[in-house]
Image (tube, rainbow over all chains, first blue to last red; front, side):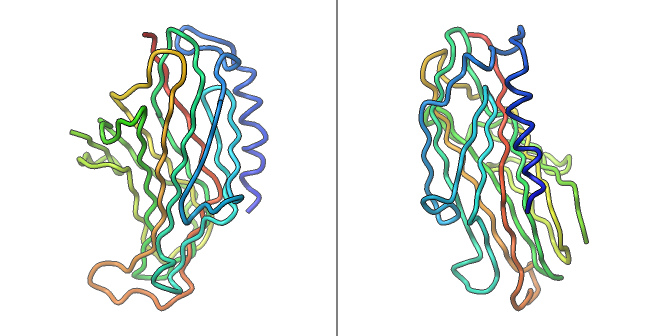
Length: 137
Length: 85
């Protein structure tokens, strides 16, 4: 799908243009120093990461699950990123927006899930809200 | 205790997950919003690991579909919150 292309083009520009505020450091002071990924949803060469300040987009080319065979109904991708952040600041993940395409018949369901850890500390999220839009039935 | 809300209902587990049932066909956008007490180190190097998963399964108590069901994740947009330390 191409609908994400426009968003991908605009997001970095918005992040770069955003000035430093009292609530966050300037985008130019935040650097992505390394990234890696693993999982059957993102085989080597199938994921690109574009970061700007405290936002980043992961774009996948082979992240697909289907009901054709038993071993194809679940796909995962684990992404590790290391940022260099300015002194006096710390961050946490606030939101993930997933964009994709689903074709599912009656009595079948698709589940999209995300977890994260920071500095090796998982499972300490207090509240997570999940919502969806753009439904086409 | 980790907790999260799905469509306004508070639960107590991680990861955040949303299941959508068919029939459906088209573009989908799903947002997971986190309110975490876990923050990175103060300045310097900060590592974050994101674990995502997509799954297709039959609705409980049904035979489900035969085939041709699929979900494709094209992209994920991530945002962080900041605090001074």
